[in-house]
Structures are given as structure tokens and as C-alpha cells.
Image (tube, rainbow, N blue to C red; front, side):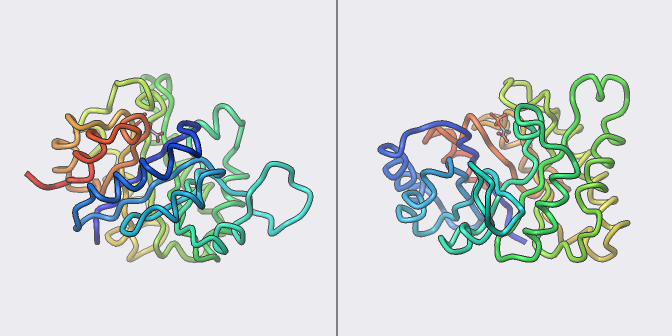
Length: 244
Ligand code: PEP
């Protein structure tokens, strides 16, 4: 199983910058890991046309096929453009745009029937961690997201503690490993046989410095990167995941 590195550009860069930046990343990539860029929806085509070796994913999608859903992008539109992945349930979608577990479940059910591979994001808030509820929170999110999902073949799960996203305060390697192991156990319980073959990645203030420690974790199969994915040097270092 190749390690997975996602670069979530969030709402950054301009169309006029995206192609050049994607080309530079594509050039810096060394074989061995799977790297997928997640640009804003408006730049998907440009980024797709600018890379040869990197994948391109959407930051969000809607579960209905088509119709009166102003502002949304369907799975069919992504498939038609050759977009291989999509984030589902990123904490900024949950917090800023009030996406709940039920909506995330609808998205996951729909996307699992398509050619688009989901990266399902889970993670607790700081208060929940302080109250000893981190595992219970993540388990609740996982179980609800997967409700009625028949197969999870290919699914990628990103553990992203909300307090670590964009704060510079990464989880300790021990905490990241412990939660990844916990999620793996839950996946195995829900879908016997899938615990080992499901990639579980970590996200939250990953950078060129802490990537070395994260890449050594047994149950962590890669990273989802926000801020550092917009910096060529940092992301190049992250793409060297697992190399000395
Ligand atoms: C993210 O957007 O998923 C993320 C982890 O952001 P950052 O790396 O900036 O914390």
C-alpha cells in the first residue's frame, strides 16, 4: 500500500498561479508515494492539465446527481473531468458550513459507488480531547459516516484533530499513532478484513520539520497537509515521506 500525501489548498491561490505551482510540484515529486492535490473547484481543470504524476482531488462534492443545488459540484462532474479523489467532511466544512454527520454519510454513500475515492476526515475538538472524549467523538463520526455503506474498498480516512488544523500545534506522534490505531481497530470491527488494507492518514499542522517523525508511525499511512502544501520547499520535503 503506497503512502498517501494530500495537499489541501483550501481557498488559496489564483487560477493564474495554480498551473505553474502544480507543475513545479509535479516536477519535484519523486516516485514511491501517492500524492494528490486538492485545489479549489474552479482550478481543478487547470491543475489536472498541469500534472502528469500527481493526482487531483476536489475539496468537496454534493451527493445528488444533478438539479437545483446552487453552488454545488456533483460526483458525475468530477468523474467527467478525471478527478480521482475528494475530501469528505473536512473540519472546515463541518464547522464553517455546518455539515453534519448525516450529510457526510449521504456524500460517502454516493461517492463509494463512483470512481472518485473519498478521503473521509474525522477529528475531535480540543474540549472533547480535554474531556477524554477524543476516541468516542471520532468513533461516533466514523460509525455515522459509514452507516449503510456496503463496501469501503479504497476509502482513505484522515484523522485530523480540529485543534491541530492551521494552528501550528500538531498532535504528538504518540497521539497520532494511538488514534490511527484506534480507528484501524474500529474499521476492522465494522468491516472485517479492511483494518489492514484501509489507509489511515494524519492531518494537522504537518510541515517539513515534523514529517520525519510522523512518517515513522506504524499505523499512519500518510498525511493531509493544508498550509505547508502551499509552499514548494515544504511540500517537496513532505513528498519525500519515509526517505532519510
Ligand atoms: C487541512 O486542511 O486538512 C490541514 C491539516 O491543514 P494544516 O496542515 O494547515 O493544519
